[in-house]
Image 1 (cartoon, rainbow, N blue to C red):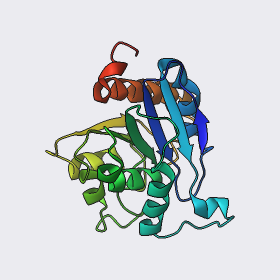
Image 2: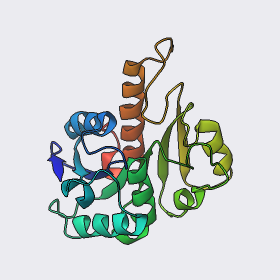
Image 3: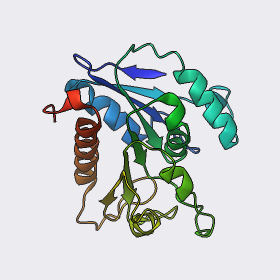
Length: 207
């Protein structure tokens, strides 16, 4: 685990990485750097398959099992927790939300389906938690762009979708994009902080 302790901590944000990356992913690192001054302890969880040196992620049930083992006895005490992650990490957070007892889920680039396979939707995972979910999704994400996700969750309670204009699955932007990487970073941090302020009452007023 990589733990960035919040200043006078009021909440904990647990973040899992994607199947093709690790806890140093730019968006995860950004939140770990920017949220602690607002009283949020950010914990980036590295899956055992990466620690073992494997290059390919294990099957979803094993991902969930490892996640639950790692967060079963958290060293941060009784602070309210929000889970989430990038891509595959977001799926794990959704599938385990009921067991971990978190008060919200943050999904960064939720992989609605494999590229070119929209018929194999994973929307059931996104809809499974009963707690609020924040989904930050690029409009050019080949795993499911903003409009695809919006259509898939239409009418579902508790899901807030935020579009990152022009962003792909890695939150990369075209060079000609009017929405710049700096804009994306600021929106990501602001939206996560606002979400935390809603699901963790003690965070209100800290945005």
